[in-house]
Amino acid sequence: MEDVGSRIKQITRELKHYVETRIELSVLNIGDKVSYLIGQSIQQLFGYAILGLGLVFGLTALSIFLGDLLDKEWAGYAIVASPFILIGLIFVVAKPKSIARKIQQQILAEFLDTLPQQQQDQKQLILKENEKKKTEKNG
Image (cartoon, rainbow, N blue to C red; front, side):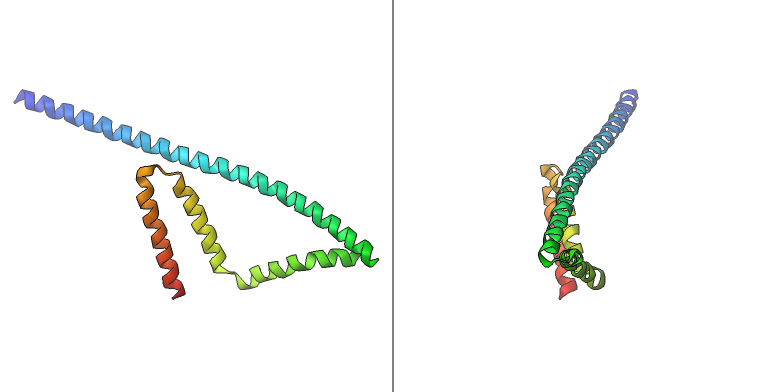
């Protein structure tokens, strides 16, 4: 009987150690995924900021050029600004939900791409569920 009791205690200790190790591994995996996504986001944000700065300078140059062609500086700026104002108004007034859904699905897909291979089946299920919800809302 004493041997059975010590064996149960040993199994209990090993099980406790296994659970603790599994939790630590999960925390490390989540931390790895989060840090990867943050690093990727910072890199993309920096790239977009540089592209945006280049776009601002390019559009300013275009505005000055058009202003010189029309002999009215304000007209160049008005011509360059008008498409942005129209697009901005469309986004503010219409609030296109399809764009928000596409962005959400892209972010979800990027996050799920960081998961290990054994979780790829779950990724496919989540993406299929999102598509199903999308078709149900549209239909």
